[in-house]
Amino acid sequence: MTQTPKSSAPPPGTAPAQGAPTMPSIPPQAPHPTPHSPTPTTPPPTSPTAPRRTAFAEGFDQLRTAATTEPGRLRIIGALLALLVVAFGSIAAWQMTERAAAADDVLNRSQPLTSDAADIYRSLADANTAAASGYLAGLQEKPAMREGYERDIRTAAAKLVTAAANSESGSTSAKTIAELSRLLPEYKGLVETARANNRQGFPVGGAYLRAANEMMQQRMLPAAQKLHETENQRLRDDYADAKSFPWAAAGLGVLALAALIWAQRRNYRRTNRVLNHGLVTATAASTIVLLWLAVGHVIARSGLNDSYDHGVRSLNVLHEARIASLTARSDENLTLVRRGADTRTLADDKVVDAYEWGYDQEIDALGKALVRAEDLADDTAGRKPVQDANGFMKIWKDRHGLARDDNESGNYQAARDRVIGAAKEPTSVCFDNVDKALATALTHEQNEFRQAASDGRDSLTGLPTGAAVLAVLGAAGAVLGIGRRLSEYR
View 1 (cartoon, rainbow, N blue to C red):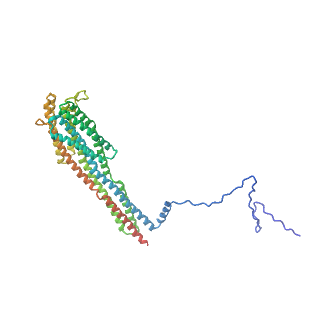
View 2: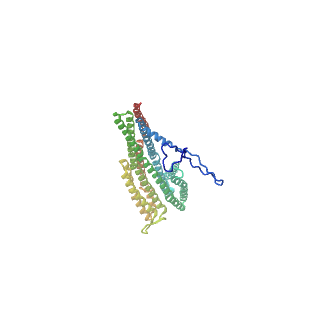
View 3: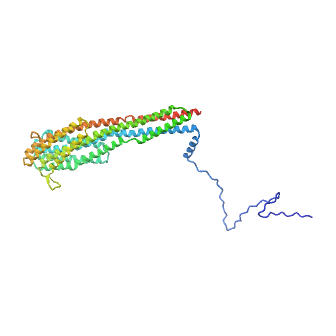
């Protein structure tokens, strides 16, 4: 009896024989937990999730996919061309609107306010001169002299109101105007007190007039000068804004033109068609805006430069001359009012009359200002009144020298007559002639400024609106031109 041999698994590491049955492998079982060990928990398997894509990434993928076909590329080119042309027109309109507004401020705001500040200074200095002249005349004060003083005070008050209305609240100019508005009634009160005492023969009137003059010279006129300098800086800032070149608009214009030329060249190379009416229209519109921008800015800058060089600079020098003339006249009168009571020690320890020394300084400043004003005048109408003022100033110096000699020799009455008008050729007539000649020169230069500034501002008229309209036309042309090419793929 034969026995069936027992089957046994092949030893490890040996392959089972061909055709021999294989036993299924039994996976190792985890050890049974003991009563004291915790039951292990296996988390359920989780499938990995893709990160969420942003709208920008999806849009970029769509754009990249579209760029693989010619119609898609044409759509992208059309959109970019339209965007460039519209951006160019928008920036050009915005920048030229700002420059036109600044040029208008130069003409109708900054320069008039600068002139008002100079008029405030001149009115205050003239009032101080008239007050000293009236005091010196005493009972012989003429109604015209008194009316001149009152007119100057009214002018200064009115100009302060105008300046306050046009100044920014809390600004340096607003604070200066408020200070002058507060001091003006105090000054007028001191002058009235001096006048009343003088008419009654009380010497104390001279002390009140001196206090009024010190208030004017040490507080009011420096404040008015500060106001004038502040407004002058504001004028210079407006000039700088109006004359600055619109680099952003010009750069975008060049970029838009380059892109349009490239698109037309690409179109020609792919279709052998020389012209695309839409793209040609967009190129023409962009070229017109760019040329208009450049030419308009050059003309505006030329006009504004001319208004500054032959208007504002001349006006500033003439204002300086007029102020020096007024101060010299005030010092001349106060020399006789104070009669040497106020002295000044010079660097060489020489003691001189303070007001006589002040007259010499101011008359020298007047002469230098007149020389500069004549150099700045660009025509005969502007030079002649300056030359006349220079001639009258020389006569004034000669006659003042005679009055000084009389005063120093003790002949006070003769000196007084030579100054306030009782003599045949008083210095008051010379001062009046100088002032009238300077007023004529100022009027001429003011007209020159307004004409040149108006020409500069007017060269920008219509440019912002024109740039916007042409930009829309150019963008529409670019879209239609590309659309014509797209129609060929349908």
